[in-house]
Picture 1 (cartoon, one colour):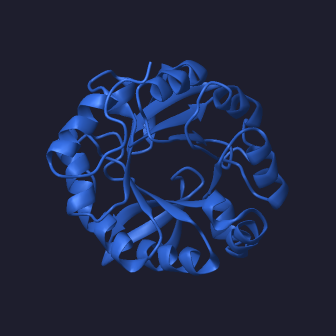
Picture 2: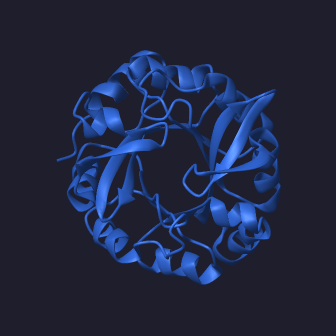
Length: 251
């Protein structure tokens, strides 16, 4: 179970379908809180770095890393091996590549070779299209004409260690993950797939794993808005028969 901090102008934000962003809190405080709440990992995404053509806010990521003791993924604006190195040195355990991987797929392989596949996550933002799902880049702003399942296979072959798969149609709606998308990608690759976009209740998380074949679930608005506690969601997932780590508050 992985909380996601989408960062814009130094603050955590959340929207619906990648638009209508609203403030959701301080990233350092939220990172510390989710670490105490038994989150298994944390994802930090600078959602406007690529579209604004700037580097990721590594200094802010470093401040978050100082407060948590769980695996931490940083993404947004990471374009080169030096960017990857900088994020890892700042305290990240993994980096998330999206737009840069689409522009230079071989970056995935170079990153995996130099830093280890376990460090390289490829984020795929996909929207339903005729016959499947189209991949978008630059924070969901630019269509790529790439098929999401084919792209997932390609990055897995290049050496990605994980895929962070976001349904743009489901993002922020709390109506459930796009199970067909999650299942199509999960069944097409042999690396872990993290389902993202649409979590609204515990049943959605269970469905993502059982029906979508996801290895993990990403959450944002239902946690930021205080609708659920991580321990409660984990307990419900465990009650459904799914193995969960460390149920309960660690504070």
